[in-house]
Length: 82
Ligand SMILES: [Zn+2]
Image 1: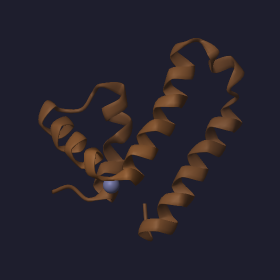
Image 2: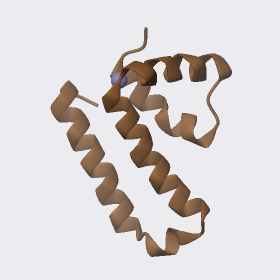
Image 3: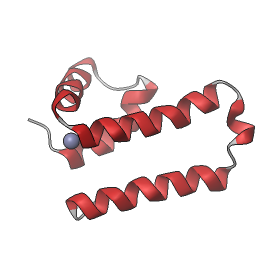
Image 4: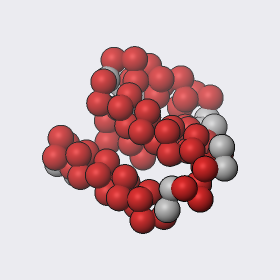
């Protein structure tokens, strides 16, 4: 069973569709039972979706950085490390 910290490292690959099928299935299994990781995915997905829509210009790099920082901070609070 995967741990949240391991999942977190794979989330961006997962969202980009670049994750192994096997890892992907494992990750989704974890997501099904972990609200926190699902939130992470939702947030990341929102960012990615905005970019793919071409709205990336409306989402300045600074804001993306801020979002990432926020997620990282929340993560550290919950798990003590990234
Ligand atoms: Zn988790």
